[in-house]
Image (cartoon, rainbow, N blue to C red):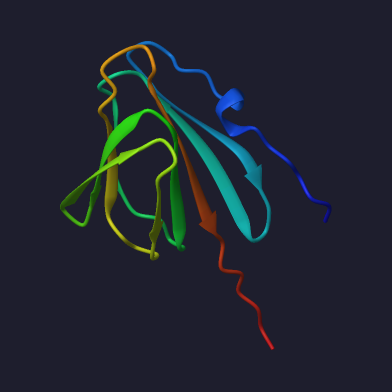
Length: 112
């Protein structure tokens, strides 16, 4: 595998009144999904089957982790274990809406 350089915020467009998701990288071991939130939009509570990193690329959001609210903004990231319930609620009040990246480490099963 060769190294790949991405500029994630430029790879997804904010759509009015919507939350948009786009898988920008997927391999046997890693998946990277970008999310773009129009003002006030959210990603409802869900879990990931593998450990995940949530990185706020732009804007502000409330991230709810197992029922606990955290205020996050551009540059912040959260490391989450597999199975952790989480949701994201955009808190940006103007046209500078939120973009996030969620990366999941895929646990490969091997038989020996």
